[in-house]
Amino acid sequence: MRHILITFILALFAVSVVGCGSDEPTMTSVDTDVPSEMAPNIFPTSWIDEIHLNEKIIRESKNWLGRALDENSGQCKVWVRTVVKNATGRNVPATSASDYSKWDPSPNFRVIWQGRNQCVTKFPSLQPGQIIQMKWIDSYMNGGPHTAIIKSAGSSSMEWYDSNYVGKLKVGSHPFTLKNWQKIEAWTVYQVN
Image (spheres, rainbow, N blue to C red):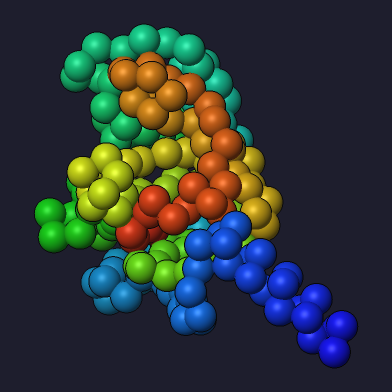
């Protein structure tokens, strides 16, 4: 009986900390919206290439830390575009007009992880330098979009580089935990390739 009670208390604690219901999350790891003519080009020739690109993105992100930006360059997506272009020469695609949590398809980016309205109890294996595009829940930030670069990631917490989050039009770095994840309605994590 004691074992059952302890299990029940731990389960309640997990739900209260993470804020998840009983629905099991379903996570998509590949973007099915990529046109078939682009499919041969979406995977890198070498994983070493991806690691190298991610390292360049992280180095470029660090160069911007603490900078105050103007209204044109300080929005999160504009800043991420600038970082990725400076670091890799690739152009980050536009955010989908019909879904703030996705980008228009591009042969230079592939989907690592995506989801919508899901209970997330742990983060998958994400890498520094990958990019997250998300839509906040309607009651937070008016349900708008946000774009960030993953600085580090573990199973229960990440750290991001982004603009316009730690301060208006300011580039910063901050933690983002599973509890924070409750503020996200939908998301996609991208890898530059």
